[in-house]
Length: 372
Image (tube, rainbow, N blue to C red; front, side, top):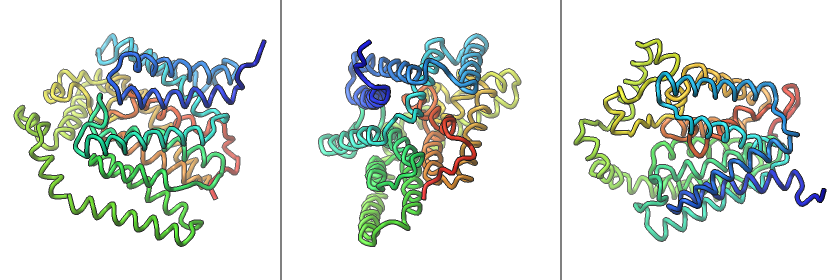
């Protein structure tokens, strides 16, 4: 049999294809591009299985079976998860096999990072800071789509113990500031600050000065326009929409509060997920809790939520013990972003969640791998 492409080449091509189609499907409202994105999930999943000789570890097999089972139970008992969503979760899960594969080169993911940066910059220049950057989502998701490949890129570097360039993260932070999304500003600020301190010891004095100067300028621009931004938000169509329907500025917190209350008071909801149609403000949000972890519970119940949180916590502890602070910084920043939006569950970035859950699967726990 003729070997048209190496296993390494297949992994890198499929991952780049995934990030590219993800970007393009949000830039153009085109059915064909959405089909290509779903095809990229299949391609990544097959590539990951092929490179691993069509096998899954016992841990991954148990996890995907549990996710499928809890999604099915939710579908029949609660009704917040559809069969289509369960299929998507399986595809997202398989896609993560390519992301966690050692054959994936950080340069491949860096291409995806810069593609996203250039597209956002181009849109800022063409439609302005208040225009729609994406056709299918608000400007709040600028930081989300920028962070997806960025956290993967730096995590791969951490795994390979290489020195990293802080500039891509700096660009992501600046563009997130300009997009004005509060969750994005907080999470990317945390990311850039942590990366700066991790890398600070090895940076040349001129580089330190350059980064500090750029940061001061970016913060100054944001502070100078702070009052304008707040006034714009308070008089926006979206805010008027919420207020006219009895919503408050803390609408998300209200949704979370009502959701948690119903989950605690009803054993069925606690175990299998809350029916969001019973939450008054849920209709305004189109049953989107704007919190990936609440969404995990809503769609798959408490057992899957505990599984995800425990796995992430375990990897975070391992990262700290190994002094792999670069990986830890990436995981913490994207999880904070997921806390305020539809980011990591039944979303484009679900494979990124699985990536951090399985990050240490191919690394012996007692190995001395950490960024120096």
